[in-house]
Image: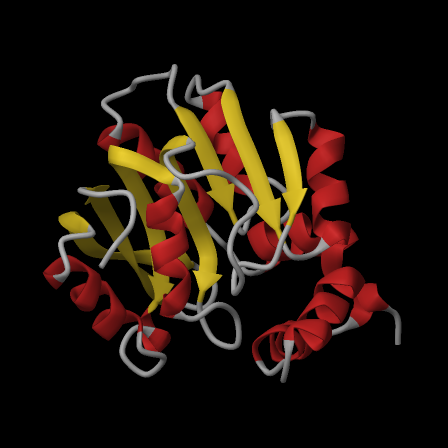
Length: 217
């Protein structure tokens, strides 16, 4: 059986049941070349479009904003941001194979290979906004990564991200989001359910926060 022949269930199982980052990277390495067509055409993925629109709304159409696409993968969100008129977007992902696919699209100012479970390789207050789509889900990055997204976003900047419906409470995202609100690290701007994959009929939480201080705590 070739990579092209594997079923939808097999693809998602490889990604969502990875025991560690090494297994996750291997899963994405095998999937990278078919990722866009599988996700959008086969699975009916739409979160990249709605995330870009949510960020555009949060920024009030400020096309001069400097944006980090965290967990950028092959650049699906970046493509949508460019369509909306944003020109200064950096991408960050754990999988170099996914970044290679994004590089071929020539839409990012810079692409960085980095582990979002570790401190990010950029200074405090670097970005006007961060978007993170499809990363806060089963078997990926925990809510501990929120603090780093806040750190690299300037005070008053915006953070837009999705959380898969089934993982929202079970994986501790809700608790961490509320903890950072109470700490004064960010304030909630909007929060709503939106389609994630049309073919599967599943949803995600679309979350928009305004950063109120660069470093929580």
